[in-house]
Image 1 (cartoon, helix red, strand yellow):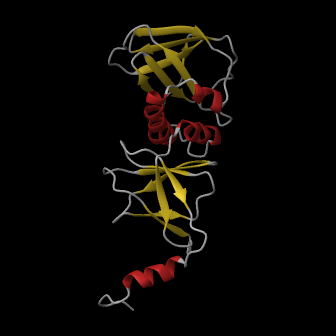
Image 2: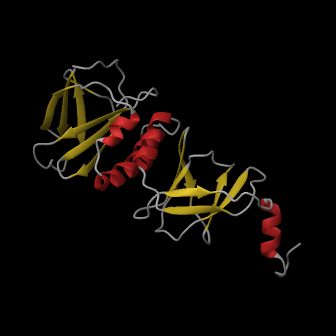
Length: 220
């Protein structure tokens, strides 16, 4: 898969478990420039992500190396869409690949605004929970009630990209603005992705905060 923003994802079947060494992708004998990253979503499967600096075409000679070990040689296959790329992964592999793309590839490859990468993440996700909006967005923020999760940064996956969503406090996550329809929240592992639930009618964020603080000492 090659996104319009220039992110290349190569799905490789390995003949054996790879050695514990950094991976590099070579095209026509030339290594792709760093940065790059590799995930191992299956026992003998690797997904390598990089940003090529040269035009690519199907049939070019590709080699994936782990250190000095050549793990796979193959001609570059026809490029796939995000939906077709996602279909090649079993349910057990999708969660690991989703987190690799959202938490590693997007920041490392400066691909937060890559719509194809975001679409691939949404195709891989299997939401099994809900984040509920607590109030109508105001002052550039929206507030969401989220489940307890291990410590770590949350990610917001929208139709236009992938962004850090910060860290919730007391079960509430503040987001910049109102996420567009079709967005997902990705908590730290092992929690699955969350759908965003928006009630039809809600008071504004300021009114909700005042109501929550009503009666507390020092509340204006």
